[in-house]
Image (tube, rainbow, N blue to C red; front, side, top):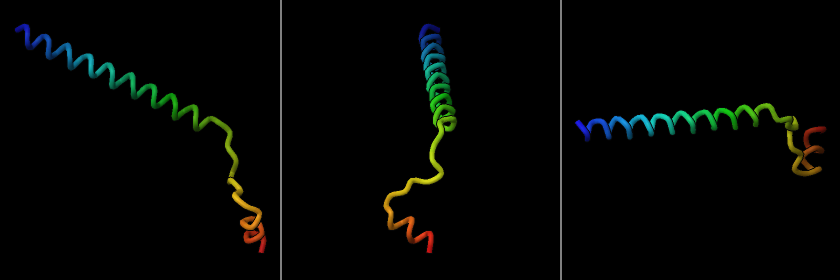
Length: 53
């Protein structure tokens, strides 16, 4: 039974780690979506001139 208990403990640890990583990823995603960002990034003045024509 000791091997089974150890296996269950490893499974529980990996599950907890996965949940922690998923929570951190969700938090980072929430922060990046909440950050203000420009509607577009102008790479050159030529781009702007082409849009205005």
